[in-house]
Amino acid sequence: MTRDTQPDSEAGSGPFWPGPDDETNSTAPGLDAAEFLISALDATGELILVRGRGGRVVHVNAAFVAAFGGVRNDWVGRWFSVAPPVSGNGPRRYEMLMRTRQGPLWIEWDERLLPDGRGVISVGRDVSSRREAHDDLEASQRAKSLFFAAVTHEMRTPLAGALGIARLLDATPLRPDQADYVRTLAHSAEHALAMVDDILDLSRLEAGKLTLRPEPVDIAALVGETVELAAPRAHEKGLEIGIVQSAAAPARIEGDPARLRQILFNLIGNAVKFTARGGIRVEIGCAPAGDGRPRLSLSVSDTGPGISERDQQNLFEHFERGAAERDGAEGGAGLGLAMVRRLAEAMNSSMGVESRLGEGAKFWVIFDLPVLAGGVGTPLAGRELAVASADTTLRETLAEQLRELGGDVVAIDRVDSLAAASGRELLLDHAWSGHADAARARHVWQLVTPAGKDDVIQALPAGVDGWLVKPVRLTSLVEQITGAVPVRRPAATPQAAPDLPALDGLQVLVAEDDPVNALIARRTLERLGAHVTMVETGRAALRALEEGRFDAALLDQRMPGMNGPEVARMARMSGHDLPLVALTANSSEDDRSNCLEAGMNDFLSKPVDPDLLAATLASLCRAEKQASMPQNSPMG
Image 1: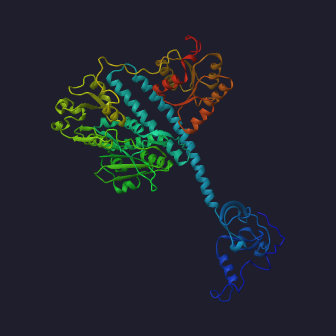
Image 2: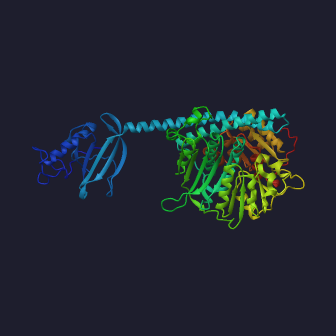
Image 3: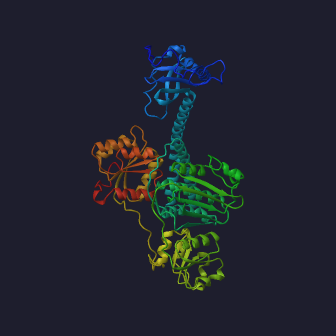
């Protein structure tokens, strides 16, 4: 702020207002129009400043004088530089920290051109309290994010250790009761880790720190994989999960597959948790925008107790549990739906719920994401099919999916009605497989659970040609019925399970300071056939790289003295070109970027999944690049 005492010709002998001849003063007896307007401006609490064409002050009101001192005439004809002159015809608004009689204050200025370019009027208001509140909120969010990041990291480390040890135990000979204990331990650790991740993700979302990683997504594949993850829990409760993809639904979109899967898994998990009888229905549809643009819609419906209107109002808030949980029917932290809503908002998408007490619930999400490919078409057009099951969810969802694909479908709900499938291609529930011959169908596919598949396929009942695993994937359905893959018949000899990628002879350096995670990494790699060298610090890792030959190195992201990214940078500067893989208890985008920018090739979260670890190392370590370090190395 500056003031110039040099007068301006625009100042004249008084304020820049129209004279008595320009306005009537009938509304203010005893005052002319100019005096009346000046009194009105003095009565307002905002700071008002009027400048002429040249930028010099022609009028200030009483609030302005009270804020900046002096008397009105001290300001008239002088400069008051707040910002560069207004250009163009539109208004502008900005905030500046200014010295006033009350001390430094943040003033928000709203500036507008006067008619005919005669000058500029600026209206200012004190927004210091708002700025301070905003700064306090940002500081609070930063502190909360740092707190959650630190706490969740410390929680993830022992939980990951517990889960990793449980996995190692599960791979050893155990009595049946011991195996049950170990699996229960693993399930509990997985649940706790998932809750920790939800809390951390919520803090990132609220702080605007969650980064989405969009890529092309095959919707049918993503939904199928996610439903398969939730299916075992549903089958344990005697529930079926069915998928229906409409013919008009987008087949491929551009989105973050991990976050899309997180949304769907939370909705399905919530439905399974609160449903005691019946089943879960997952629908993939199209919800066109107002301009006709296609949009993906996903919905999850259940046959649970339903949700009251009162509970629906707060259902998506943090830690909101709803009546079923408050009454003790089910437990949980109440984070899943809050997570879903915030993830949907982060994708500029919308979600909602439709429910009435006693009539189940339907949660839906409409994704405003780019659509890359249209519907799947009608590959089963002209085919005569039948679905036979006593379970309503299984029967209705499969029949509807077949119709969406163009098939002529008969749904059979009684075993003594199987004759209705005569001459058709029949999808038969496992419970009725002993009656397959009575159907006289062209082909019969038995519907089996993943857990029961191995027993079923070794001895298919008479009249059964093959099997489909529930919940049935759309691609499997089309391939089997159209003959794109051979009809599945039991092999003459049991087929061996596919081998994990071979790591035999691979020399791997592991830098991990936590003894539990170090044990898990060593045992996991040794079971995969690798030879392992363990170190506890970053500097020890660099010395090991200088002294020995390795095919790959696994580096803990956080180690005393020198962390994983620092080790990676030093290794690259020293010319080491072996694959470097980060091991971390965190899984944030910042952590991932930090590791990859440091020169690492990949990023794995603890506890490391053995299949993922094997696949990662096999892809990064080509056979022709394997080191020739002897197995009896003194560093092993």
